[in-house]
Length: 404
Image (tube, rainbow, N blue to C red):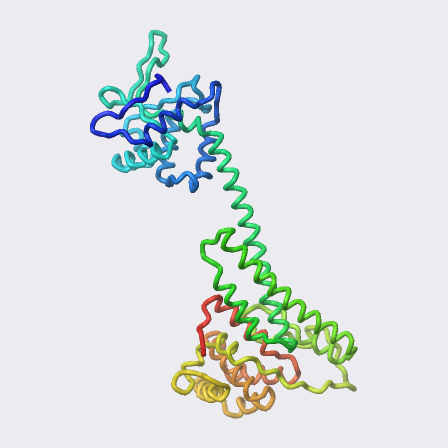
């Protein structure tokens, strides 16, 4: 900065500590210090949150840097730019002069810019006899150059924090996916455990993820989600070891056939033939009864059926079965089709299937035909309700309706 003493602003504008700090900082430029102005500006953009400056203020700084004739900022080239308000407004994308003044003041208060006002408040440069600038009045970029090292350090720290946060979010996404699919396979295979409580814990963790996350807020959620994954994995490992010890080939084959790899909107898994199972003409495994899933999970996956329950609520399985009868009639499902489903799946599971069909009614052409098809698949042990409920829960995301 030219001159060793402080300068005060022209006119009625008062002196602030921010102005004085910027001028004092201008004196701290180490001799022969230089910096690429655009690299420094990019670092400034990275460090913006820590420095407390807005995007509009950065637009003004970008415009001011564009008036600096050299690419390299240095005292040797001079550090004062002196554009008129009209030209500065044009390069700041047409920003109004009042807005310009406000953001210039913000840059000064942030210690990134200093004013050097002329006696009449105009911005200009006075040249010597050789045509070189002898003295200039306008905005000094010396504070920006003096803080170049600090700004670059802050930018590096911000980049490291962003990278760390991205890795945490990736780990959380993978862990969240793992837990959902592990719960699904556990329900499909009938693994013993309090899966309603486990699923509720999982949903609480998912809904607690903030929309604007930080490393501090995500880390405890990730740790708890990983612990839940480990717990579920242990339960599944125990089931696999028990199954291997039993050595029942028919049971193992049935478990393979019941595996569900379909998308979240498909209700039924592929047929045995599609899965490559060899038909047997001599040995036919006895069909196992379908497992009844927790009522709370059914209602979370299929909240639409609540409106059809007694008093527009469902408090127990009897209420759900009454609601299913009403829905069956509403969807045009014949009584014989529903009774057949109850015989094959059990009344609780049949009611739950009707609730699932109601939830996806807009995507099903014939509810009656669809129910008969699911009943036929269940009769052949090719349909499981677990993946249906999990796919509907995933489709609803974190917005499940709370039920009593």
